[in-house]
Length: 470
Image 1 (cartoon, helix red, strand yellow):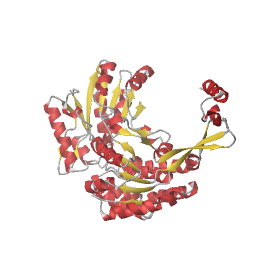
Image 2 (cartoon, one colour; image 1 turned 180 degrees about the vertical axis):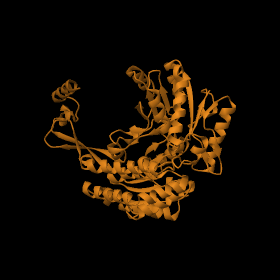
Image 3 (cartoon, rainbow, N blue to C red; image 1 turned 90 degrees about the vertical axis):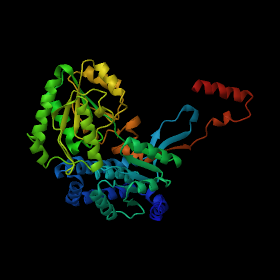
Image 4 (cartoon, rainbow, N blue to C red; image 1 turned 30 degrees about the vertical axis):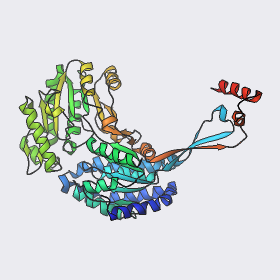
Protein backbone atom coordinates (compact mmCIF):
# COMPACT_ATOMS: atom_id res chain seq x y z
CA UNK A 1 0.00 0.00 0.00
CA UNK A 2 1.29 3.45 -0.92
CA UNK A 3 1.37 5.60 2.21
CA UNK A 4 1.06 9.38 2.26
CA UNK A 5 4.74 9.59 3.25
CA UNK A 6 5.86 7.57 0.22
CA UNK A 7 3.67 9.66 -2.07
CA UNK A 8 5.08 12.87 -0.58
CA UNK A 9 8.70 11.80 -1.15
CA UNK A 10 7.99 10.58 -4.66
CA UNK A 11 6.15 13.79 -5.58
CA UNK A 12 9.04 15.89 -4.25
CA UNK A 13 11.52 13.98 -6.39
CA UNK A 14 9.33 14.18 -9.47
CA UNK A 15 9.13 17.95 -9.02
CA UNK A 16 12.91 18.13 -8.64
CA UNK A 17 14.01 15.68 -11.31
CA UNK A 18 14.50 18.22 -14.12
CA UNK A 19 16.69 20.44 -11.97
CA UNK A 20 18.84 17.43 -11.12
CA UNK A 21 18.85 16.31 -14.76
CA UNK A 22 20.37 19.64 -15.79
CA UNK A 23 23.34 19.37 -13.40
CA UNK A 24 26.79 19.42 -14.97
CA UNK A 25 29.56 16.85 -14.70
CA UNK A 26 31.31 19.16 -12.24
CA UNK A 27 28.23 19.36 -10.01
CA UNK A 28 27.64 15.61 -10.04
CA UNK A 29 31.30 14.94 -9.36
CA UNK A 30 31.16 17.29 -6.36
CA UNK A 31 28.25 15.28 -4.94
CA UNK A 32 30.21 12.06 -5.35
CA UNK A 33 33.26 13.64 -3.73
CA UNK A 34 31.08 14.59 -0.76
CA UNK A 35 29.75 11.04 -0.63
CA UNK A 36 33.27 9.57 -0.61
CA UNK A 37 34.36 11.94 2.16
CA UNK A 38 31.38 10.84 4.26
CA UNK A 39 32.26 7.16 3.75
CA UNK A 40 35.83 7.86 4.90
CA UNK A 41 34.54 9.78 7.91
CA UNK A 42 31.99 7.09 8.88
CA UNK A 43 34.16 3.99 8.43
CA UNK A 44 33.95 2.93 12.06
CA UNK A 45 30.21 3.55 12.30
CA UNK A 46 29.55 1.54 9.14
CA UNK A 47 31.68 -1.34 10.45
CA UNK A 48 29.93 -1.23 13.83
CA UNK A 49 26.51 -1.42 12.17
CA UNK A 50 27.49 -4.43 10.02
CA UNK A 51 28.96 -6.19 13.04
CA UNK A 52 25.79 -5.56 15.06
CA UNK A 53 23.66 -7.00 12.24
CA UNK A 54 25.46 -10.33 11.74
CA UNK A 55 28.96 -10.15 13.23
CA UNK A 56 30.60 -9.14 9.96
CA UNK A 57 34.34 -8.73 10.65
CA UNK A 58 35.42 -5.09 10.24
CA UNK A 59 38.41 -6.08 8.08
CA UNK A 60 36.12 -8.08 5.81
CA UNK A 61 33.74 -5.15 5.52
CA UNK A 62 36.69 -2.91 4.65
CA UNK A 63 37.76 -4.81 1.54
CA UNK A 64 34.40 -6.23 0.41
CA UNK A 65 32.32 -3.08 0.87
CA UNK A 66 34.10 0.17 1.72
CA UNK A 67 36.88 -0.34 -0.80
CA UNK A 68 34.30 -1.25 -3.46
CA UNK A 69 32.33 1.94 -2.81
CA UNK A 70 35.33 4.24 -2.76
CA UNK A 71 36.87 2.65 -5.85
CA UNK A 72 33.56 3.03 -7.72
CA UNK A 73 33.33 6.70 -6.77
CA UNK A 74 36.93 7.41 -7.80
CA UNK A 75 36.50 5.67 -11.13
CA UNK A 76 33.21 7.45 -11.85
CA UNK A 77 34.55 10.90 -11.00
CA UNK A 78 37.61 10.31 -13.18
CA UNK A 79 35.56 9.44 -16.26
CA UNK A 80 32.21 11.16 -15.76
CA UNK A 81 32.82 14.20 -17.95
CA UNK A 82 33.69 11.98 -20.90
CA UNK A 83 30.74 9.65 -20.31
CA UNK A 84 28.34 12.59 -20.35
CA UNK A 85 29.55 13.98 -23.68
CA UNK A 86 27.32 13.28 -26.69
CA UNK A 87 28.75 10.49 -28.83
CA UNK A 88 28.99 11.26 -32.54
CA UNK A 89 27.94 8.39 -34.81
CA UNK A 90 28.34 7.90 -38.55
CA UNK A 91 25.74 8.96 -41.10
CA UNK A 92 24.71 6.74 -44.06
CA UNK A 93 24.90 8.18 -47.59
CA UNK A 94 21.13 8.35 -47.80
CA UNK A 95 21.20 10.95 -44.99
CA UNK A 96 24.05 12.96 -46.44
CA UNK A 97 23.84 16.49 -45.05
CA UNK A 98 22.82 15.38 -41.55
CA UNK A 99 24.78 14.79 -38.34
CA UNK A 100 23.88 12.21 -35.71
CA UNK A 101 24.77 11.71 -32.07
CA UNK A 102 23.74 9.72 -29.00
CA UNK A 103 23.04 11.59 -25.78
CA UNK A 104 22.80 10.07 -22.34
CA UNK A 105 19.91 11.61 -20.47
CA UNK A 106 18.77 10.73 -16.93
CA UNK A 107 15.98 8.24 -16.54
CA UNK A 108 14.32 10.46 -13.94
CA UNK A 109 13.33 9.07 -10.54
CA UNK A 110 14.99 5.76 -9.66
CA UNK A 111 14.04 3.20 -7.01
CA UNK A 112 16.93 1.22 -5.50
CA UNK A 113 15.91 -1.88 -3.55
CA UNK A 114 19.05 -2.98 -1.71
CA UNK A 115 19.81 -6.39 -0.18
CA UNK A 116 21.06 -7.33 3.27
CA UNK A 117 24.15 -9.40 2.52
CA UNK A 118 26.36 -6.45 1.55
CA UNK A 119 23.94 -3.92 2.93
CA UNK A 120 26.10 -0.82 2.62
CA UNK A 121 27.94 -1.30 -0.66
CA UNK A 122 25.01 -2.77 -2.60
CA UNK A 123 22.98 0.28 -1.63
CA UNK A 124 25.64 2.88 -2.36
CA UNK A 125 27.24 1.56 -5.57
CA UNK A 126 23.93 1.70 -7.52
CA UNK A 127 23.36 5.13 -5.99
CA UNK A 128 26.72 6.28 -7.38
CA UNK A 129 25.50 5.34 -10.86
CA UNK A 130 22.17 7.09 -10.27
CA UNK A 131 23.87 10.31 -9.17
CA UNK A 132 26.40 10.16 -12.02
CA UNK A 133 23.57 9.83 -14.54
CA UNK A 134 21.67 12.79 -13.06
CA UNK A 135 18.74 11.01 -11.43
CA UNK A 136 16.79 11.45 -8.24
CA UNK A 137 16.66 8.27 -6.17
CA UNK A 138 14.70 6.56 -3.42
CA UNK A 139 16.74 3.94 -1.59
CA UNK A 140 15.06 1.13 0.34
CA UNK A 141 17.54 -0.86 2.51
CA UNK A 142 16.75 -4.36 3.73
CA UNK A 143 14.93 -4.72 7.04
CA UNK A 144 17.05 -7.82 7.75
CA UNK A 145 20.03 -5.61 8.63
CA UNK A 146 18.35 -2.96 10.82
CA UNK A 147 21.53 -1.35 12.14
CA UNK A 148 22.92 -0.74 8.66
CA UNK A 149 19.49 0.39 7.45
CA UNK A 150 19.30 3.01 10.22
CA UNK A 151 22.86 4.10 9.48
CA UNK A 152 22.04 4.54 5.79
CA UNK A 153 19.05 6.68 6.73
CA UNK A 154 21.26 9.00 8.81
CA UNK A 155 24.16 8.83 6.37
CA UNK A 156 22.20 9.81 3.27
CA UNK A 157 20.04 12.28 5.17
CA UNK A 158 23.17 14.21 6.13
CA UNK A 159 24.30 14.48 2.51
CA UNK A 160 21.19 15.03 0.37
CA UNK A 161 17.82 16.67 0.55
CA UNK A 162 15.15 14.00 0.26
CA UNK A 163 13.86 15.66 -2.89
CA UNK A 164 17.05 14.35 -4.52
CA UNK A 165 17.99 11.20 -2.57
CA UNK A 166 15.82 9.69 0.15
CA UNK A 167 16.14 6.56 2.27
CA UNK A 168 12.92 4.78 3.19
CA UNK A 169 13.06 2.09 5.88
CA UNK A 170 10.60 -0.72 6.44
CA UNK A 171 9.66 -4.26 5.52
CA UNK A 172 8.11 -5.98 2.54
CA UNK A 173 4.96 -3.84 2.80
CA UNK A 174 7.04 -0.69 2.24
CA UNK A 175 8.79 -2.25 -0.76
CA UNK A 176 5.42 -3.25 -2.20
CA UNK A 177 4.10 0.27 -1.67
CA UNK A 178 7.10 1.76 -3.43
CA UNK A 179 6.61 -0.59 -6.37
CA UNK A 180 3.09 0.77 -6.85
CA UNK A 181 4.58 4.19 -7.67
CA UNK A 182 5.52 5.03 -11.28
CA UNK A 183 9.29 5.14 -10.93
CA UNK A 184 11.24 5.54 -14.17
CA UNK A 185 13.69 2.76 -13.30
CA UNK A 186 13.87 0.07 -10.62
CA UNK A 187 17.21 -1.32 -9.50
CA UNK A 188 16.78 -4.49 -7.44
CA UNK A 189 19.42 -6.73 -5.87
CA UNK A 190 18.23 -9.94 -4.24
CA UNK A 191 16.65 -13.30 -4.95
CA UNK A 192 15.16 -14.50 -8.21
CA UNK A 193 11.70 -15.10 -6.72
CA UNK A 194 11.34 -11.48 -5.60
CA UNK A 195 13.07 -10.32 -8.79
CA UNK A 196 10.16 -11.68 -10.82
CA UNK A 197 7.72 -9.71 -8.67
CA UNK A 198 9.77 -6.55 -9.06
CA UNK A 199 9.85 -6.94 -12.83
CA UNK A 200 6.08 -7.54 -12.96
CA UNK A 201 5.45 -4.44 -10.83
CA UNK A 202 7.75 -2.31 -12.99
CA UNK A 203 5.98 -3.56 -16.11
CA UNK A 204 2.75 -1.98 -14.91
CA UNK A 205 4.39 1.43 -15.34
CA UNK A 206 6.60 0.38 -18.27
CA UNK A 207 9.61 1.20 -16.09
CA UNK A 208 13.01 -0.12 -17.06
CA UNK A 209 14.72 -2.45 -14.59
CA UNK A 210 18.12 -3.68 -13.48
CA UNK A 211 17.88 -7.00 -11.65
CA UNK A 212 20.94 -8.35 -9.85
CA UNK A 213 19.95 -11.83 -8.67
CA UNK A 214 21.94 -15.03 -8.11
CA UNK A 215 21.91 -18.71 -8.96
CA UNK A 216 24.05 -21.80 -8.53
CA UNK A 217 27.46 -20.62 -9.71
CA UNK A 218 29.61 -23.65 -10.62
CA UNK A 219 33.37 -23.94 -10.26
CA UNK A 220 35.32 -26.30 -12.53
CA UNK A 221 38.68 -27.67 -11.37
CA UNK A 222 40.35 -29.84 -14.00
CA UNK A 223 43.20 -32.31 -13.68
CA UNK A 224 45.85 -29.70 -14.60
CA UNK A 225 44.87 -27.09 -12.02
CA UNK A 226 47.15 -25.90 -9.23
CA UNK A 227 45.08 -27.53 -6.49
CA UNK A 228 46.57 -25.71 -3.53
CA UNK A 229 45.96 -22.30 -5.09
CA UNK A 230 42.53 -23.33 -6.38
CA UNK A 231 41.41 -24.70 -3.00
CA UNK A 232 42.60 -21.64 -1.11
CA UNK A 233 40.88 -19.20 -3.47
CA UNK A 234 37.66 -21.20 -3.60
CA UNK A 235 37.55 -21.59 0.19
CA UNK A 236 38.13 -17.88 0.70
CA UNK A 237 35.42 -16.85 -1.75
CA UNK A 238 32.93 -19.43 -0.46
CA UNK A 239 33.20 -18.54 3.22
CA UNK A 240 33.63 -14.77 3.06
CA UNK A 241 30.44 -13.29 4.52
CA UNK A 242 29.65 -16.86 5.70
CA UNK A 243 28.76 -17.81 2.14
CA UNK A 244 26.04 -15.19 1.92
CA UNK A 245 27.33 -13.84 -1.39
CA UNK A 246 25.36 -14.03 -4.63
CA UNK A 247 28.58 -14.47 -6.59
CA UNK A 248 30.10 -17.17 -4.35
CA UNK A 249 31.04 -20.56 -5.81
CA UNK A 250 27.93 -22.61 -5.10
CA UNK A 251 29.53 -26.00 -5.72
CA UNK A 252 32.78 -27.41 -7.12
CA UNK A 253 33.20 -29.91 -9.94
CA UNK A 254 36.63 -31.54 -9.65
CA UNK A 255 38.15 -34.04 -12.05
CA UNK A 256 37.73 -37.45 -10.40
CA UNK A 257 41.44 -38.20 -10.61
CA UNK A 258 42.17 -35.32 -8.24
CA UNK A 259 38.99 -35.06 -6.17
CA UNK A 260 40.48 -36.51 -2.97
CA UNK A 261 43.53 -34.29 -3.29
CA UNK A 262 41.37 -31.21 -3.78
CA UNK A 263 39.29 -32.00 -0.69
CA UNK A 264 42.46 -32.41 1.36
CA UNK A 265 43.74 -29.02 0.15
CA UNK A 266 40.37 -27.39 0.81
CA UNK A 267 40.32 -28.75 4.37
CA UNK A 268 43.83 -27.41 4.88
CA UNK A 269 42.71 -23.99 3.60
CA UNK A 270 39.72 -23.93 5.97
CA UNK A 271 42.07 -24.60 8.89
CA UNK A 272 44.55 -21.97 7.76
CA UNK A 273 41.92 -19.26 7.25
CA UNK A 274 39.45 -19.92 10.07
CA UNK A 275 41.12 -22.16 12.66
CA UNK A 276 42.54 -25.65 12.97
CA UNK A 277 39.73 -27.11 15.08
CA UNK A 278 35.95 -26.90 15.19
CA UNK A 279 36.22 -24.88 18.40
CA UNK A 280 38.72 -22.45 16.86
CA UNK A 281 36.44 -21.85 13.89
CA UNK A 282 33.43 -21.22 16.11
CA UNK A 283 35.43 -18.65 18.12
CA UNK A 284 37.30 -16.85 15.35
CA UNK A 285 36.45 -13.16 14.95
CA UNK A 286 37.08 -13.50 11.21
CA UNK A 287 33.88 -15.34 10.35
CA UNK A 288 30.44 -13.75 10.37
CA UNK A 289 27.05 -15.21 11.21
CA UNK A 290 23.90 -16.11 9.28
CA UNK A 291 21.68 -13.08 8.94
CA UNK A 292 18.54 -14.34 10.70
CA UNK A 293 16.80 -17.36 12.22
CA UNK A 294 14.89 -18.20 9.03
CA UNK A 295 18.05 -18.31 6.92
CA UNK A 296 19.78 -20.39 9.60
CA UNK A 297 16.90 -22.87 9.73
CA UNK A 298 16.90 -23.23 5.93
CA UNK A 299 20.63 -23.98 5.85
CA UNK A 300 20.53 -26.45 8.73
CA UNK A 301 17.58 -28.25 7.14
CA UNK A 302 19.18 -28.64 3.71
CA UNK A 303 22.46 -29.75 5.29
CA UNK A 304 20.73 -32.41 7.43
CA UNK A 305 18.68 -33.71 4.51
CA UNK A 306 21.74 -33.91 2.25
CA UNK A 307 23.77 -35.80 4.85
CA UNK A 308 20.81 -38.12 5.49
CA UNK A 309 20.84 -38.82 1.75
CA UNK A 310 24.42 -40.10 1.85
CA UNK A 311 26.67 -37.03 1.68
CA UNK A 312 29.83 -37.06 3.81
CA UNK A 313 30.89 -34.08 5.95
CA UNK A 314 34.60 -33.66 5.27
CA UNK A 315 34.95 -30.66 7.58
CA UNK A 316 32.51 -28.55 9.56
CA UNK A 317 28.84 -29.41 9.82
CA UNK A 318 28.37 -27.82 13.25
CA UNK A 319 25.45 -25.47 13.79
CA UNK A 320 24.31 -23.29 16.69
CA UNK A 321 20.85 -21.75 16.45
CA UNK A 322 21.35 -19.35 19.36
CA UNK A 323 24.45 -17.91 17.68
CA UNK A 324 23.14 -18.33 14.10
CA UNK A 325 26.39 -20.15 13.41
CA UNK A 326 26.90 -22.57 10.55
CA UNK A 327 30.48 -23.81 10.40
CA UNK A 328 32.52 -23.66 7.20
CA UNK A 329 31.45 -27.00 5.75
CA UNK A 330 32.71 -29.18 2.90
CA UNK A 331 30.63 -32.09 1.62
CA UNK A 332 31.65 -35.05 -0.54
CA UNK A 333 29.52 -37.87 -1.88
CA UNK A 334 27.03 -35.36 -3.27
CA UNK A 335 25.03 -36.06 -6.42
CA UNK A 336 23.20 -33.61 -8.64
CA UNK A 337 19.95 -34.94 -7.19
CA UNK A 338 20.91 -34.09 -3.59
CA UNK A 339 18.81 -31.53 -1.66
CA UNK A 340 21.80 -29.16 -1.48
CA UNK A 341 21.77 -28.99 -5.29
CA UNK A 342 18.12 -27.98 -5.67
CA UNK A 343 18.60 -24.23 -5.25
CA UNK A 344 21.26 -21.62 -4.52
CA UNK A 345 22.87 -22.48 -1.18
CA UNK A 346 23.66 -18.92 -0.06
CA UNK A 347 25.55 -20.14 2.96
CA UNK A 348 28.86 -21.71 4.06
CA UNK A 349 28.28 -25.22 2.69
CA UNK A 350 30.47 -26.35 -0.21
CA UNK A 351 29.54 -29.54 -2.10
CA UNK A 352 32.40 -31.15 -4.03
CA UNK A 353 31.29 -33.31 -6.97
CA UNK A 354 33.75 -35.42 -9.03
CA UNK A 355 33.48 -35.59 -12.81
CA UNK A 356 35.18 -37.66 -15.47
CA UNK A 357 33.80 -36.14 -18.66
CA UNK A 358 33.92 -32.34 -18.95
CA UNK A 359 31.14 -32.12 -21.52
CA UNK A 360 28.82 -34.12 -19.27
CA UNK A 361 29.71 -31.93 -16.28
CA UNK A 362 29.02 -28.77 -18.28
CA UNK A 363 25.67 -30.15 -19.45
CA UNK A 364 24.67 -30.88 -15.85
CA UNK A 365 25.48 -27.33 -14.78
CA UNK A 366 23.42 -25.94 -17.65
CA UNK A 367 20.41 -27.88 -16.38
CA UNK A 368 20.59 -25.86 -13.15
CA UNK A 369 19.96 -22.56 -14.94
CA UNK A 370 22.01 -19.53 -15.93
CA UNK A 371 24.19 -18.54 -12.96
CA UNK A 372 25.65 -15.21 -11.97
CA UNK A 373 29.18 -16.61 -12.22
CA UNK A 374 31.14 -19.50 -13.70
CA UNK A 375 34.67 -20.20 -12.44
CA UNK A 376 37.34 -22.32 -14.09
CA UNK A 377 40.66 -23.52 -12.66
CA UNK A 378 42.89 -25.03 -15.32
CA UNK A 379 46.30 -24.64 -16.93
CA UNK A 380 44.82 -25.55 -20.31
CA UNK A 381 43.49 -22.72 -22.42
CA UNK A 382 41.36 -25.07 -24.52
CA UNK A 383 39.56 -26.32 -21.39
CA UNK A 384 38.86 -22.78 -20.24
CA UNK A 385 37.53 -21.85 -23.66
CA UNK A 386 35.34 -24.97 -23.84
CA UNK A 387 33.71 -24.09 -20.52
CA UNK A 388 33.17 -20.45 -21.47
CA UNK A 389 31.80 -21.32 -24.91
CA UNK A 390 29.50 -24.05 -23.57
CA UNK A 391 27.94 -22.14 -20.67
CA UNK A 392 26.08 -18.88 -20.11
CA UNK A 393 26.72 -16.74 -17.05
CA UNK A 394 26.74 -13.17 -15.87
CA UNK A 395 30.52 -13.28 -15.65
CA UNK A 396 33.47 -15.64 -15.52
CA UNK A 397 36.79 -15.69 -13.69
CA UNK A 398 39.66 -17.99 -14.58
CA UNK A 399 41.98 -19.36 -11.87
CA UNK A 400 40.37 -16.97 -9.39
CA UNK A 401 36.89 -16.27 -8.10
CA UNK A 402 34.78 -13.15 -7.39
CA UNK A 403 37.40 -10.60 -8.41
CA UNK A 404 35.85 -9.68 -11.75
CA UNK A 405 33.35 -7.81 -9.55
CA UNK A 406 36.18 -5.50 -8.48
CA UNK A 407 37.10 -4.33 -12.00
CA UNK A 408 35.04 -1.17 -12.74
CA UNK A 409 35.77 -1.54 -16.46
CA UNK A 410 33.85 -4.84 -16.58
CA UNK A 411 30.04 -4.99 -16.58
CA UNK A 412 28.62 -6.76 -13.55
CA UNK A 413 25.26 -8.43 -13.92
CA UNK A 414 23.40 -11.65 -14.52
CA UNK A 415 21.60 -13.34 -17.37
CA UNK A 416 18.22 -15.03 -17.36
CA UNK A 417 17.27 -16.11 -13.85
CA UNK A 418 20.49 -14.61 -12.44
CA UNK A 419 19.66 -11.09 -13.54
CA UNK A 420 18.88 -8.52 -16.17
CA UNK A 421 21.15 -5.62 -17.06
CA UNK A 422 24.54 -4.73 -15.63
CA UNK A 423 26.34 -1.95 -13.83
CA UNK A 424 29.72 -0.75 -12.48
CA UNK A 425 31.65 2.06 -14.11
CA UNK A 426 30.31 3.25 -17.43
CA UNK A 427 27.93 0.28 -17.49
CA UNK A 428 26.15 1.64 -14.41
CA UNK A 429 26.03 5.12 -15.90
CA UNK A 430 24.44 3.72 -19.06
CA UNK A 431 22.03 1.48 -17.15
CA UNK A 432 20.63 4.52 -15.35
CA UNK A 433 20.60 6.71 -18.45
CA UNK A 434 18.43 6.71 -21.54
CA UNK A 435 20.40 6.68 -24.78
CA UNK A 436 18.67 9.33 -26.84
CA UNK A 437 19.19 9.50 -30.59
CA UNK A 438 19.59 13.01 -32.04
CA UNK A 439 19.79 13.76 -35.78
CA UNK A 440 20.32 17.25 -37.17
CA UNK A 441 19.92 18.36 -40.75
CA UNK A 442 22.74 20.75 -41.54
CA UNK A 443 22.63 20.94 -45.34
CA UNK A 444 20.04 20.24 -48.05
CA UNK A 445 19.56 16.52 -48.66
CA UNK A 446 18.23 14.41 -51.51
CA UNK A 447 15.50 13.01 -49.30
CA UNK A 448 12.82 15.09 -51.06
CA UNK A 449 13.27 12.83 -54.09
CA UNK A 450 11.54 10.08 -52.10
CA UNK A 451 8.45 12.17 -51.36
CA UNK A 452 5.17 11.57 -53.22
CA UNK A 453 4.05 11.42 -55.96
CA UNK A 454 5.65 8.02 -56.45
CA UNK A 455 5.95 8.17 -60.23
CA UNK A 456 7.82 9.93 -62.98
CA UNK A 457 11.47 10.04 -63.97
CA UNK A 458 12.72 11.63 -60.76
CA UNK A 459 11.02 9.00 -58.65
CA UNK A 460 12.44 6.18 -60.80
CA UNK A 461 15.92 7.74 -60.49
CA UNK A 462 15.52 8.07 -56.72
CA UNK A 463 14.49 4.41 -56.39
CA UNK A 464 17.52 3.27 -58.41
CA UNK A 465 19.78 5.37 -56.14
CA UNK A 466 18.13 3.89 -53.05
CA UNK A 467 18.86 0.34 -54.24
CA UNK A 468 22.48 1.27 -54.96
CA UNK A 469 22.82 2.58 -51.39
CA UNK A 470 21.37 -0.57 -49.77
